[in-house]
Image (cartoon, rainbow, N blue to C red; front, top):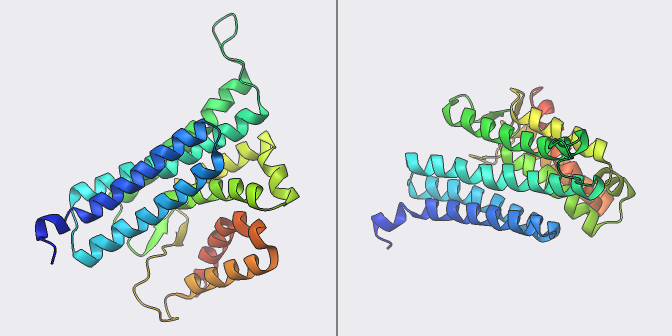
Length: 245
């Protein structure tokens, strides 16, 4: 059996893997490898799930672990997807740098400010979550991993499918900006959304979660990899429908 002093550090070690994945994803995204960066962000999501799961399993809760988890999430699910947004915008909008008067033009300002807004809202979302006791069973506002998934799903759909719609979205600066503003706003909103933490498999109380699984499976059966970007819209839909149960 593992000594208790080692056991209590397991969740924080897994959280550190989340943070490392997000950091490496940022480096890869800045160097133009958006697909591998997206996979690393997905790996960070797995580590984000496992650290909480291991903390509950081992009863290894700590105030430091809670804060470390939020810091890792800011990097992996705030900064990393914002860098992907920056790369999408930069590929369609030439970065001219400061002009002769030392100021940047409006396009360049948007190139920086739009992704920065996503990072700010992710940080605000996590700060509020840490002090909000009403979010133990449901979320108020979109969780940061969902924000990251919404972004990486576009990258992966472009790479692994031939969807013309996804291709159009990722090459349209206007759509990318609107999508970023929408995701940022959802993170700091108070809209009630599903928490995917499951305490039992009973239908009662899990209607929204089962509905989400059914929606996702059906979309992948019908659309294949082109359905990846639909995961977050389906999550939002299932969350709102769950309010009816």
